[in-house]
Length: 353
Ligand SMILES: Nc1ncnc2c1ncn2[C@@H]1O[C@H](COP(=O)(O)OP(=O)(O)OP(=O)(O)O)[C@@H](O)[C@H]1O
Ligand SMILES: [Mg+2]
Image (cartoon, rainbow, N blue to C red; front, top):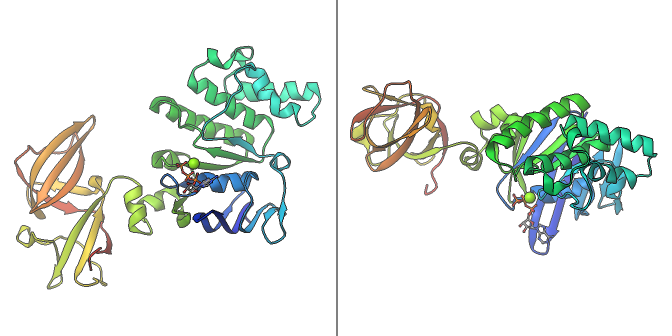
């Protein structure tokens, strides 16, 4: 039984359909991410869940209770939803010290002073801010400020946390640390997280399930591993991780890179439904083997060291293929001949067929 439920939700801004007939179900205690390019409707969806936007169509329910319904023209106001929220541009109040920043949402909820102090202190302790209670935001680093926003959200004891790109202002190392902190906090408090990001590695690291969205329309809802290994369409394949899309032709039951039939056939299972005998072969740079012989013949054009990984651009006829190998695997030089073997292949219709 799902906990947060969006049913056929649509939101328009003038001619723009920001969210188009969106249905999603989130389990209690789940970390659910919404992932998609800029402008695809992530923040709008979160704002509707939070109660800051009404719906043109559809319904949002939490547990047994309807929170928003276009048909019933019913909207529970945001402050009654008791969600913890951290928004894209995290806002801390510069004139309040850390403690008061965290306590403020509790004060407007008319809790007793003792209750407020207890909850705020607990939230500060869990976010590692207890030492900074009396500091002002301008005395803190951006990571610490980000944590004020998290502490403030935790303090209200939310059942659901809505996080909109909460780590976007942090440097990469701090971002990674905060991912673990968010996950730890979730384990401690057991809240449900709806997390919005356009950073796929962040979504992969944090989520139980990921929803991929494009132009307001859901593309796939699945576990991180399935989104990566079984992308439902070409858009998802290219959006998640690095990708090659190679034009392929089929001749006598074999597949060849288009224009480079003399480089030899592609080994492995080829799709039964081959469109017009032309398709796109999608593969990740890390899922291609580079070897001395056996496979499609190619030439190394460029080789770049990326720390532990070597990034190759190899040419099969006029088609460039990106291959990434561990620094410890056999190495090839620029200008050297090599052979390619595709270990994981995904097939999509050719654009021009
Ligand atoms: N208040 C508004 N008025 C008019 N158009 C809006 C409004 N809010 C959002 N939109 C439009 O709705 C679409 C979805 O916007 P939204 O902010 O939900 O995208 P997003 O996925 O959060 O993008 P980003 O990753 O850049 O934050 C965009 O085309 C945007 O221009
Ligand atoms: Mg946004």
